[in-house]
Image (cartoon, rainbow, N blue to C red; front, side):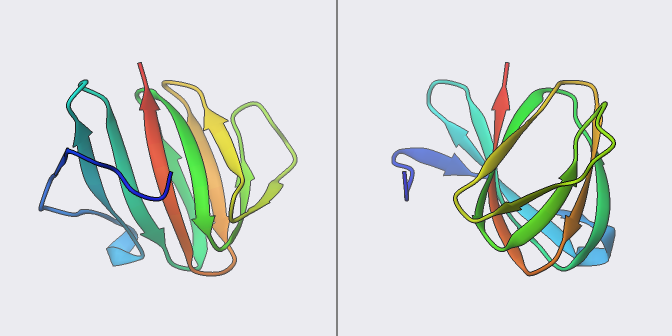
Length: 104
């Protein structure tokens, strides 16, 4: 899906790591939520409350998922799942565009 219809977008950005990571929250009529964001090159760690599906729209990253010891390389068109109440590492190699879906 390349676009979302009939949504509400929160104007205020979610900004992390001194502006190197930012996203906007998109709210859907059914109560679901996604964020659309941009990651600048660097290494970051994020914590989750809800389970997430991270879809890479552009760029190249390596991710270290909870319980894993080996980094996994991903590019545009690929995705990864993160369990609720966990942390994951992401090493952004090139500017990356993503869509994060929150799973209840």
